[in-house]
Amino acid sequence: MCHAVRTLSLFALLALPLAAAPVPKPPPANPIEGTWHDGTEGESGYWHFGKDGVAGVGEKKNPQDCKYRIGPSKDPKQIEWSHNGGKTWFLGIYEVDGDSLKLAFGRGGVNERPESMDGKNLQFNYYKLKRVEK
Image (cartoon, rainbow, N blue to C red; front, side, top):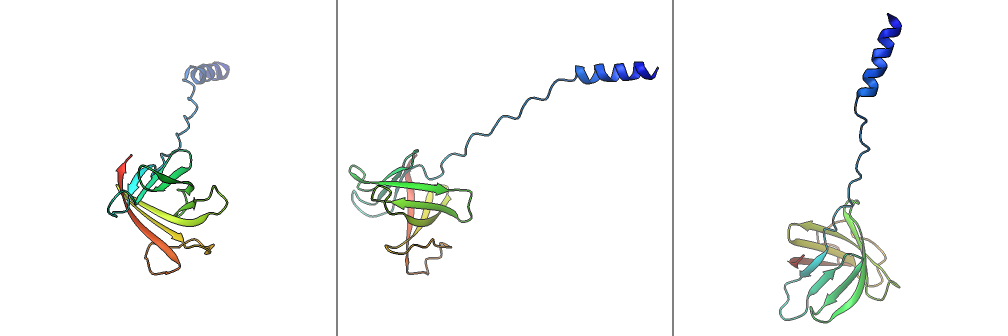
């Protein structure tokens, strides 16, 4: 009898469908990807963040070539910006709220990352941008 119960238990376990391996989640979308504008008049004031860390800033039709990297899992979220091919990186933070993007970077020569967006520390540059294209 005991053998029959064990045999039935074994068949019951084998009859259960095998659990599928968990499907890995795709990486989160880049929240700053797209084109943003700082509100200045004319053709300047555009910031473009591409998928592959390539960026541009300045005029929409003729932006200055830049690079960026983000650390979206940090708190606050981190960004690093280079306008000279990656020779120098400006340390920063960012916040995205819908179609609004706030950025804060250390000014030239400041090798320090801002800790908040409060705008009080004068050794940092603060920017408020609105999304114009995804």
